[in-house]
Length: 172
Image (cartoon, rainbow, N blue to C red; front, side):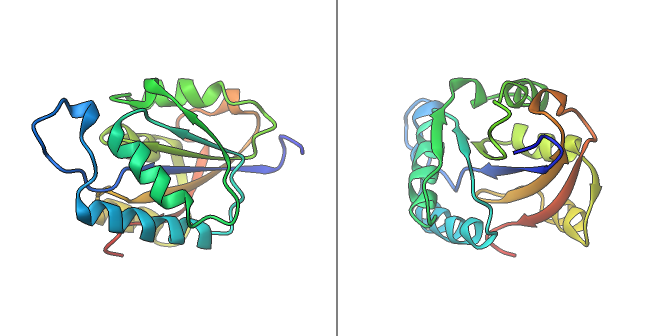
């Protein structure tokens, strides 16, 4: 694999969480969130992207989202549960992605807003079709994901270098 080949980054927001009287990090998915996570997993599988690596926040709702979504994949990628994703800013998420080994071509990040939406906005220097307009109109609701592409080593990922290829939300 060459770093000249386009890399794909999918930024996946966790599905709808419930609000029980627990710490924010421990909030589980709501019933609708469990359904949306599986639907999002099917939509992610439909992209045809073979993920080499999934980076998932350690929060309960992101781990549950990932567990339900990945069941829809033809092959489970290596998964790393990363506490730095929880409450991360877009800059902190870029720093984390900069650490990705270059043998990982396609990476899926399961995280939280506002970081995930901010990262999609910041990375996308260009967009295909109406993806940016749909993302702007819909915002980044629970279980939404954006597919971005860039060329080069992971350490060169920075604002504006990616192209927003697609965007999907449960109500799309």
